[in-house]
Amino acid sequence: MNWPKSTVMELQRDGVLLVEDGNHGESRPRPDEFVKRGVAFIRAADMDASDVLFDTASRINDVARKRITKGIGAPGDILLSHKGTVGKVALVPDDAPPFVCSPQTTFWRTLKGDRLDRRYLHAYLRSPYFHQQLASRAGETDMAPYVSLTSQRGLHVLMPDIDIQRRIGSIVGALDAKISVERKIKGTLADIARALFQSWFVDFDPVRAKSLGSSSSLPASLESLFPDTFEESELGQIPSGWTVGSLDQIAHFLNGLALQRFPPNENGSLPVIKIAQLKAGNTEGADLASPNLDPGYIVQDGDVLFSWSGSLECVVWSGGKGALNQHLFKVTSKDYPKWFFYLWIHRHLDEFRRIAAAKATTMGHIQRYHLSEAKILLPHKKLLDAADRIIGPLIESINVRAVQSKILGRIRDLLLPKLISGELAIEDDAEFGVVK
Image 1 (cartoon, rainbow, N blue to C red):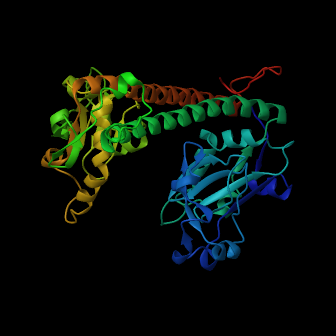
Image 2: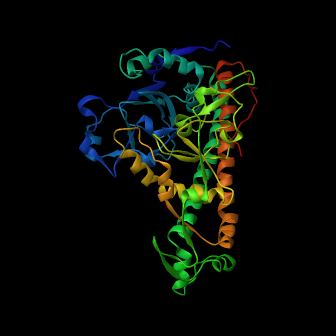
Image 3: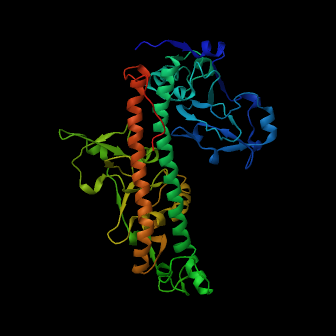
């Protein structure tokens, strides 16, 4: 369907749209103006899966904020990264704190909702049609990929009838809302699992409470499984009857293959999971390898993957079936539940990163003996089994929700170009709300 289109410059001239990036040059914040508490300074790194990560964003003081005259964001803005990492898009929520855009980000703000619907614009900026325009301009300089504000003013926006815009925005927005809810629940479940693990197996809160004659607030059947005294160990005082072990004692760490030696064949292919895929959480654009690998080197959703070189990360994988590349461990155990070794790895992750960072002459990494040196505590089996009935379902639910979110994301990404192009017709009386 040939919908009318307008350039950003035309829409700005008509007062429909405002597009503005952050301050450059002397007006931008100086290094000594970044503080722990202040106004959020949003970079491309602070945008993830259409969300703005205000909690982890850098912050600037009042002196810097008063000097800034451009890129002052507002709730409802749509943010676009346009330098270095080009094409990230995020919608600023209605309850957003004060923030400003960095010189690498631009806000797109609808000024006339009866001409340009905000949710439609958010969908449009993620469409292949728009990203093809970005890609054609991102290489206009010899520097890092960059689409200047001047270039952005020449970009086109498809402008169907406002009712169609709203219906497209409603459909895509409903999927976005469901994905966002799943992500927030997943984060909450992860926080609960980590808190329980920390309390029971690191801080020994139930044991400390019982040793003082106090209640741990746990159900009696669970509280009874914790000892009420401590004993000395190589790690200091630990709960009586518990033993000291190591990471490689409770789990098997299988290193991946040099998969360039296993190219795709007549039987098909598998995406290669490298560190980049681990960090992205998906296999989009991944290299391909033969599917005829030992089953141990084939990754499935729910597997624990640990990158021991370069960027050290540990995740429960949810990016679909793939092949395990070198520099990644697939971590399994016949004797201990997944959450137990996964959370113990995370307990040691900062130390592993410190070890890797100290290797200045090579790519930062750890070695197998570091897994032996990473000490853990082993409670008795009855307590571990009881904890597994509580923490195990939390970890499994996290993975299920992560997979569901990715499926919904794929559905949205399949629908998006068809909706934006008009290929997928929308009935005039169609109603769409937030997916429950």
